[in-house]
Amino acid sequence: QVRLEESGGGSVQPGHSLTLSCTASIRTIDTYTMAWFRQATGKERELVAAIHWSADQTSYSPSVKGRFTISRDNAKNTVYLQMNSLKPEDTAVYSCGEKLLSSLEDMRTGAMNFWGKGTLVTVST
Image (tube, rainbow, N blue to C red; front, side, top):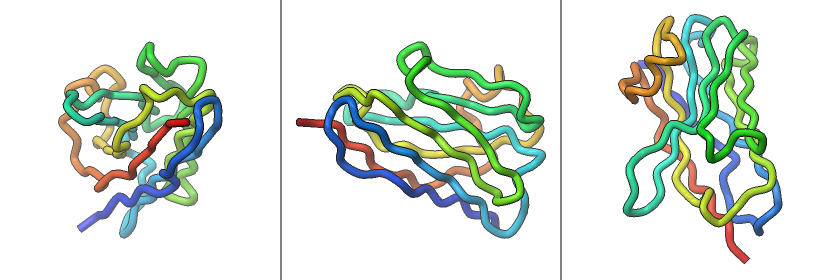
């Protein structure tokens, strides 16, 4: 069974940057729309960013637009989330998900074909 594995989480101070990676095993991601979700303690899961399987469209939550950038490298079966100007409210477990041939709109449902286990990002002084 395919496995999505996130990496790159950690603890940083406000204003700093982190880059998360999500790599798929067993098969390629080129027909999957990929997304990053996050869930903070006591809050609902939030769609942070998504990138269409054709790689020509992206979408972002208003809370991260202009600070975060999602990208993909199909040759490496990996999707990235570059996070700049991090804020304490960005603290959460970040998980990647994928959905076969999905539109960006459908990614908002949170109904993915596969999920990673998540990586913790902590932003504090």
